[in-house]
Figure (cartoon, rainbow, N blue to C red):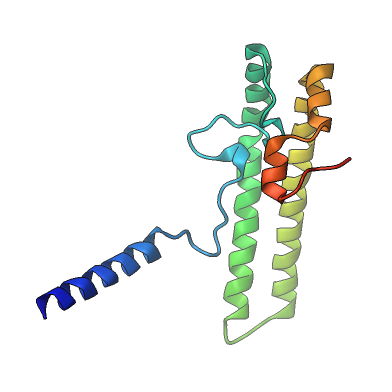
Length: 151
């Protein structure tokens, strides 16, 4: 009887630990360029060997935009949370919902546009050979998609 209780207790503890360890469903993981503890680098540079000078310049470019990206991502999260709260409340208001959705769309557009600008600035730092590497299929592309990339 005590072993059964011990096993049941372990199962409950494991279930509770798993539930608390899992990230919140409404909070996406940070983008690779902003992952904590790592240099901010655009994901497309994975597998490209940069010189120390290039790494420093990429860091400067990315670091300068982090506050702006963080602000926009907070605005996006707030609009999503506001929409969820409004949709689960007793009094849904179309005008408020539209305003929240529009604010979220503007924030998302700014995030996407900022990232595209950053990617272009970084791309301009690359040598002709490094740019050629970007155009050819790379092993991590196949792993991510399950098949080789074709252009």
